[in-house]
Length: 258
Image 1 (cartoon, helix red, strand yellow):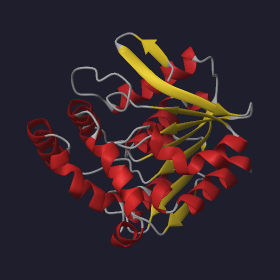
Image 2: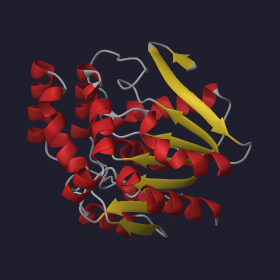
Image 3: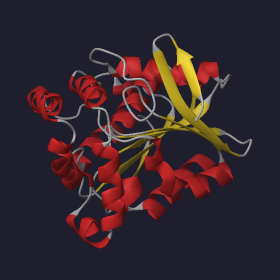
Image 4: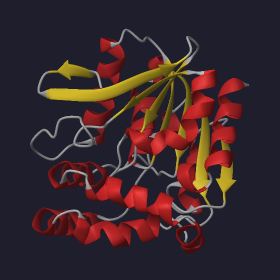
């Protein structure tokens, strides 16, 4: 896989698809860019797709210290600059969606359209994130994997699609504990509730009807604050792009192709 070097950070990325509008895909906490595999056959037919591993994840660098959402957002801008991409569509899920919110507020001139998936202006409490950080740093990723998987997927999906769930769990367990904890801190410290109304980029909000991490009320808040935004509800929990892959892909393609 190719890398872009920006100071201490090496960002692993993959560019595929046709010479059409660029679509950047940003992964959730505890995953790498392979989480988007269900979407790739259709996305590659319609877009020039840029997938990347967020700082601390996958094959990208695990730099020291706690991260911030601003830092992760500037990583995206650095990647676009290095690849000489002036503008792009951006689709982010969970932590990737928080990055998308930051980009919509602070770098709208680089965005064509914005898709915010299973995300929120603020996720969880400081106490919850601190407890998870402590657990992961002390006991590793496997200590939280089962609980996370239960929040990623509905009981029905876990029962009917065990291979897909096992693949996601393996991706989570193979994540760097240090990188994961550093990104937990970024989510813990970010509250974009007041600034989200500054987003002027045309935006789609996708959410899961049964998502315990970012429930429908979080999506409804985003839609109420982002002028002209639209929303799509899927019968899914948190990783809706995997649990409802076809419906998710169709929603994104329809919005970006209008």
